[in-house]
Image 1: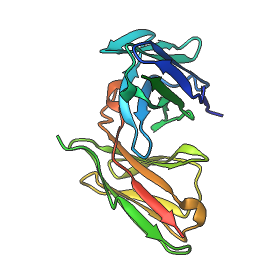
Image 2 (image 1 turned 135 degrees about the horizontal axis):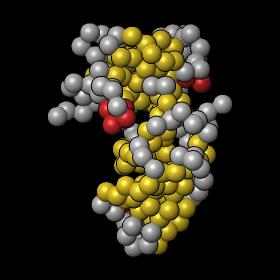
Image 3 (image 1 turned 180 degrees about the horizontal axis):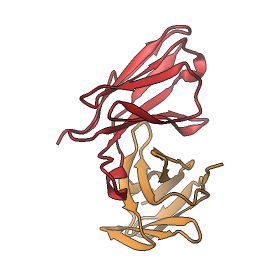
Image 4 (image 1 turned 90 degrees about the horizontal axis):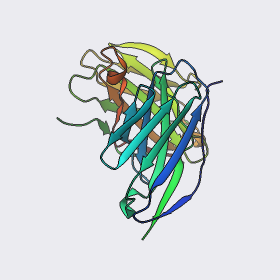
Length: 109
Length: 116
């Protein structure tokens, strides 16, 4: 069964610190991996995509992928209160995103 | 470029009724996917359409159906509504032109369905 595991949190991080979000997945077929951010009552917003092993940086965000370990992570540097949201890890397989339960991140001013 | 649009944004129905939700993808996007989000079950995949063909379907009863038109716009229909169908229904579009970068899905604002 395809599964995505995320720590549901909440993960509380001081403003300005680094937030680290982790995700493991079971479907070895997945080749594309996405991180979405979702504010309460809103739709998911794409933060990062990653397709190859290693790191990918975009501004304050860095995604890391290790296909051998079936592990994806997202680092948020210089965390801001506006980063407070639920972060969803989603591998893509067979024309669908496979969702984790999401990690609720709280940035404390 | 305009984003994914969904109509209506909010809907209230009673049990036993049916409902049709609409989704217009980003211009040039040929794939449309539908997801249901509830507090208890989280995000769940309903189905995906590409060039008017359903390529994949999630584990939902036959009361949930969809279709895609030649202009890539999509509709989903839920018949004989149940209380448990109350949810946020999300539509996402992607280029799906081959290659992982075109699999990126962009979401519309969703339709909030309440079944009384």
